[in-house]
Length: 175
Image (cartoon, rainbow, N blue to C red):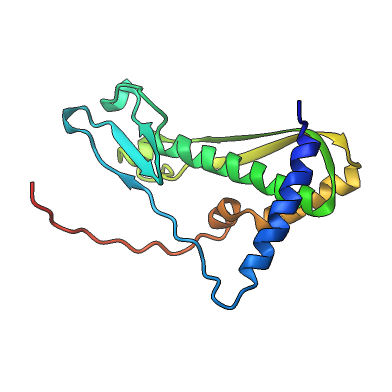
């Protein structure tokens, strides 16, 4: 069975090919798109991303049916996945030998802010933190350097620590 080290070697080859493609004069940023449609009387929010659908929902206390993760939980999932992927990218670039990799992200959410119960309660998730658990033939110094590179290069991490503007609008549609 292939190991994570085998995968890192494969990933390094694929990234080299992609780098070459991205160096072309006509290279452009890749578009991203997600669409959430509220389902009838249930309030469940299936989110479509490419050919995938993720069901999101609320806990029963917020009139949900607990059929899937909440949006703030998906934010943590996005951060955990993006950090893990960026650890793989950096490890592949450096030739680091990971045997295992796990990233855990934690936070808290204060519904007193969202429901306007307490005016000074935070609305956004707070206390975001992550732990990357790595095993393999890599020194503590190299892990420290890899972590610094990951935090410099991880797109979702960067969006959270250096927020980007978000524009929005409302469009009226037919029922």
